[in-house]
Length: 254
Length: 307
Image 1 (spheres, rainbow over the protein chains, first blue to last red):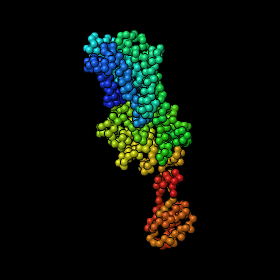
Image 2 (cartoon, chains in turn red, purple):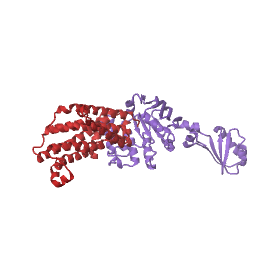
Image 3 (tube, chains in turn yellow, orange):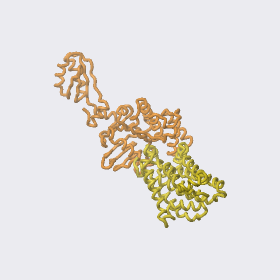
Image 4 (tube, chains in turn purple, green):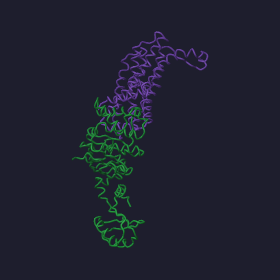
């Protein structure tokens, strides 16, 4: 039996539990609030207070794009890990997977279906962040930024998010507890985000370097070719971690 | 006829601890087979090995001729499995879960709907509309049986299907199992002897990973019939007792208030000689009956924990 029954189940579960919209709601808030905060915060905090507090409040479309990417890469990715971490571990701990695996099913189908539905939810969430962000930027800082480069930058961020999903699924398949999955994922992404600081090829090729390329593209400062190698590496990582998740599930006794 | 389930020297060890040791099992096709044993005997391990949820440390197992290690999908497609505490997706309804389970076997369209409706009727959940998380334990267990039957299996494996249920839930589940008799092979593990007595044709007794007995119920009773007789006479039995102790067919006799409890070597000799003795002594006979051993007594005897 292939992936279809699992896709159907995952989709309905995401829809009914509201998980499908949780990330979209958060990303929508970030997409709307980022340009608004940058535009109006300097007006809300008097200039004297800003100098007393030593605040340097950035402004303008470039700062807004930069802030949005930072927020999404930190808060967004953290919430993404929290949403995905229990996907397999929780079903295993509850015994739901035992009943499913007693039937002639493919573990690969289970893993890929979970990945596909999380990936769709993440894509939806990214659109929920970037489309209103683009519109607000046009209104608050006319003429704003160009849509196509912004969307290409968002696409790079999506690839980074898919890597987060694939690794967290692998961690979830490895551990019987959500906490174990969360700790492993957290550690991995801490290490991953540190890699670009090493400079040179690490900055260019590591999946976390994609975020810098995405920011550059969104501001029209970079070329799509800048991050392509990073995209390739991230896509390879997605495939590798999904395969590892399948191997981890097959290695368990239920 | 080939057995529906067969194992050869099936073993399972966990970090040096032996959970199952050289299990050689042959479950006749079409039987209701009780797999008896105290807690920790290795019953659940055996079932999980048969389903392919655990890997054997040694030996082989077959379900309807399919090796569960080499042909796991072929074996699983012919069996239905109910774990001790089945866990469903709580947000689904009973009908939704059955549809999901049916899709896993590739069932679609009218075939699926017919099977789903039939099973919901069979387990009495046709009117259960809410999500599964609102179901009682008994309802979950019945849904568990329904999902295990969704593929019209040749072999049904039930792990302690009644152990967590109240008497009403237990009766409902046993009634369902009894209604399935004849159509498929039912292999169920339990430590509740009354359940086995009620529905099983044959049993295997397992203790500390070792199989101690494997018989039909009739054969088990015959082998372990202890030839015990209860005799009540209408007056003082002292003289009878003295005469009985000289009889070669008697093993021993105990006095229990007004009754005499006789353990005999040969029941036929006892049945022939006893009425003669009583008549010779002119005693009024109130009661003479051959007592059968309960399954509990047989179970304890097989386990070596009987009196």
